[in-house]
Image 1: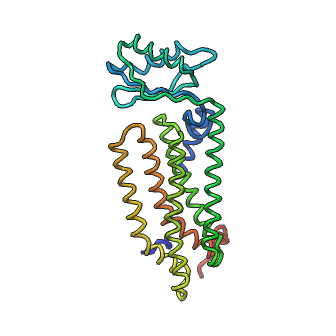
Image 2: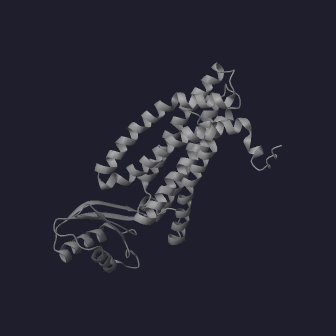
Image 3: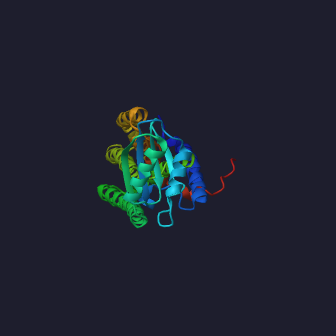
Length: 315
């Protein structure tokens, strides 16, 4: 199995997967004017109210009208984002409101819709705290990338050009980050899903899984570079990938099957988190096998020096 031979095909596949996500990030930005992803209350501030109806569940328009009736200049909670939960509950996101307003809304729901209301969850975050969380999230991702780059450089300091291993690990990691962000952008555009604290948790978990699998391949490359000195570098790297292929696929497939079961049979409150995690781990498995080690070969051969040079005509 010669994986390295078709490295540019795998690079092209990665590019084709990333581009739609970037397009939808732009569409989200143009539609909301707030950023490439629809952000949850954890990042932009606001209130989340989840209620269950013991009687018939009202229509979405009726809930929106009720919120409009309680909207004021101080608490402009009109035009909430309403999502059904199961068959008898709603998840309602709006701008920040107080506990007092929440109590009035629930009382009015019981009065207007003739059904007892069970409060499932109420979370309120001020816009200032949401902005602070957004900055902290960006810093966490940058810090993780820098720490991984330094660790790989240190771990592979005994081999020639250790910085190449760090670069070859960071680029596939960025690939996985863009795949996750693109998936979130597409889901947000069509389903109205919002990036929240659980989404950030999934993203950081994907980064960890991606680099973990990449280091396994790189460690085998390091071992074989000392053992298989008589063969060329490209063949040695390909042999290292094949040696770790079964382990990589088996390990990641076990995780993905568990996550897939949670997507199908888990609750609505975790489905978003699990689906993003599933997509990210699948992307991480792909990038560790088909992107990371091939990038090492590209760096070793300095292939970028010939990308834009015209090919010599055959004699």
